[in-house]
Image 1: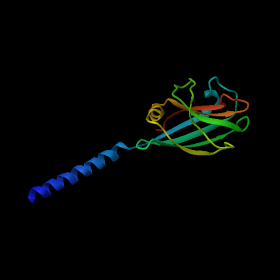
Image 2: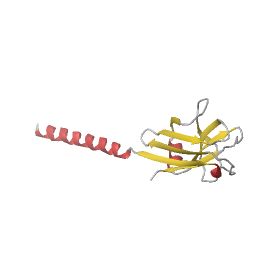
Image 3: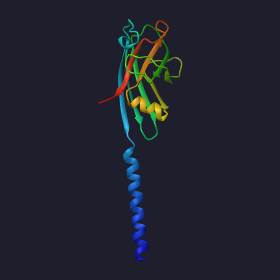
Image 4: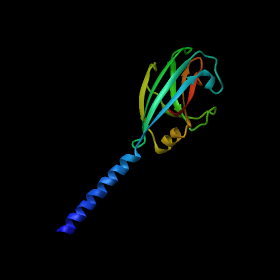
Length: 147
């Protein structure tokens, strides 16, 4: 009987440690960027500006984002997260922003693949807003971890 109780306690303790270990590995990483015409590739001549903040849940790979912008040459016709790319390099879209019209502020979320999450955490994603006058992008910012 004493051995059964000891074994039961050991199993309960091991299970509790496993749960704590799993919880300790999950984290929320915060991101930010400033959207500027000078960050586009090639740079654009626009008074447009914006900010982006976001969070990544490392357990579920759910990425939530908030974007505010103003001063663009016209309505936004498309918006995307692009990657993988270093600052100053163009890449294909990874997460398109859906909706019509695309207006400030933008609130959204996306389920990322493990590869996308790694590229985001490694600073290899950028966000940009496209207008009719600047179909390749009017303002852009490299998405980096917030301090």
